[in-house]
Image (cartoon, rainbow, N blue to C red; front, side):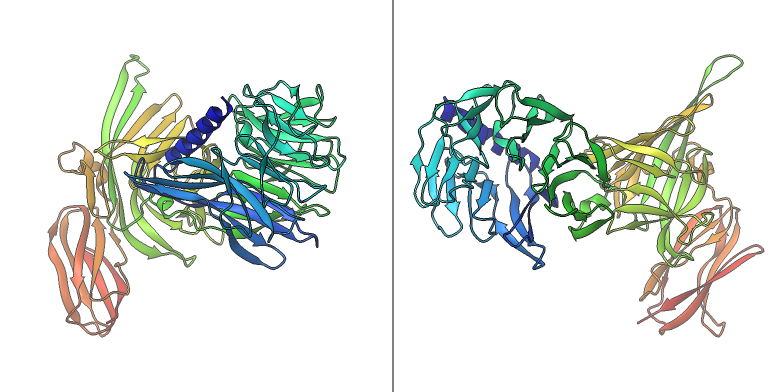
Length: 636
């Protein structure tokens, strides 16, 4: 029965691994641990997870471990975990636990599973090639702190080595004692779980045991134990009914000594300061909490901008290390410093594709009430958003110029936006801001579900409103199946909008209390030259009138400088004869691009300068009494 249970755990673990690898995942931190060597130097061990391919095959994933020596400032590969699958064969290797002799990072032993045609558990030393194989998985391994030749490992049942992991013997134990942790202070004492998930304690290495806590664990093999230096208090992190617990014992793990100290719906991460009894740190979401009294009370210590995936507290110091998906931090009482970063995933930027020529066509339904008759009024209209050029603003930064739309006032306007590719933040230029940068945040594409941020997206010109990353689902129009992120908040009423990967802004809901509710949905778009859905404007009643420009604009040509061709955009609020002419620096006309009657609208023309020499040129828009000239540079 016990081995069957372990096989089930291994298969379930592999199934979960495959499911989370069902799509490409860019490299991200997935675990952080740490230790001090005998000289008091800090060594961090972190995992980087990534995956490539689609479920069920072919796909591959990697969750390998790396070693960061802070004193030597070296960052090196440590242990491989990963695998691949195709239609004929699966090959996977896990590293489930590892331990060091005398806190020497060059001398270690580790265990896990290797899965090919069959699955098998293994144990390997740093200086062994083949290792020892048995059972279905190597789940936990501990070196005795009293005798470092004595090692215990769970391979579905307890195996023991008395010669430092060279040879292994099956230990005497009860069949339902699943070894989890060896006491740090007595190598005869160990803790485990029985099949129902109750916590067990043995004082004779698993031969006899007693139930010490009836609070169950749903995943006993991932339960983590920590030992306080007072040799009395113990801590464990476990999961039950999808909730995560910190439990503590105040009497060496004996019966009636355990109590739950902390509960969260999020995974929680723990580190105790081995130089101070009762000093523990706990990370929940993006917050780190501190307790000086064995977890009886907690106070907020630090808060990061993203969810934390691991922490380590350096003893005899105020330093604490924490990792989020893309950053590794060194934290002290007075500072938070990033010591390592991973590039943000390029696919994140696809949630807001800003490229010249991209456009989006939306349908808007307004619901309001005639207050005299009480009759519902439904008004349908259409509008377009389009990226029409690039422009450098007075703060020295380059922005995409967008013929945009004010969702509240229902008028067209111009916006200038850019994406910081190193942070995933979308900025909008706003000359009215009292700032040297003149920028406000429109979106943070690196937000995680539950994060709150302030944005001016829905109400340009107004104070930013608080929006929360509310939900993740999928966009499935036009035979597409793309990730979609939804954001909700409130200012004048209730607001919601969503961004779809590879598409951008696909829906908006705005509500002005006692005035109207507006539902805005994407009808079609053109993204990097590819047409999705319905992008026809002329067949949509009322759309042309709504899209008419309100003033003359001559855009900066793009690209600029150029070779040999460039595009020139302009808009006219009135019909009439319009001309676009190009002149050299002496005022000589070198090209007439447009000279004809045009209706009010937005236009674009190509300028081919392949027959001209390099230099500065000027292009001029003339319509009636309106004249505007801009400079461009041809470089061959």
